[in-house]
Length: 148
Image: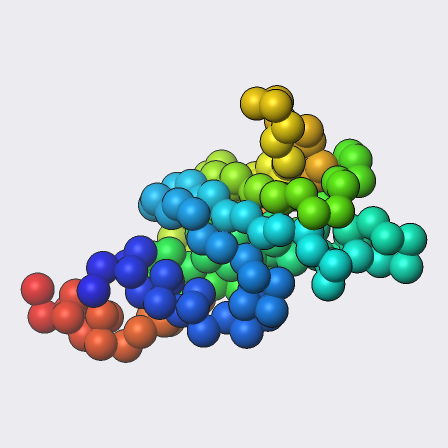
């Protein structure tokens, strides 16, 4: 099993992401795309999508791209700026990419948006930094790498 397959398998076990029906659309070594539908379970008391639901989508993308090298990583910092309120029922999309990384630290940028008539509507931007612990997510994969 390669590193991307490991993190994809782990994502299937993410109860919080499953609760929001977050879907992993595309994962590469340095980029990710996910989406979720802003259904009634994501709405706040004003009938608008809750900021926490928007953040949840971006944070799910952060957890997947940040752990895609079979190296358990933890968030050091995450900051989100909200630009607009999406409409209920819309498909909310996040695209993320690694800006820079080392053996211990990684920095990522996420664009959260909806699409209407082929046009992107920017909803939020999130910047996040993580610490790579050096511990494998799946021990068997680490053992195989040491044998080679």
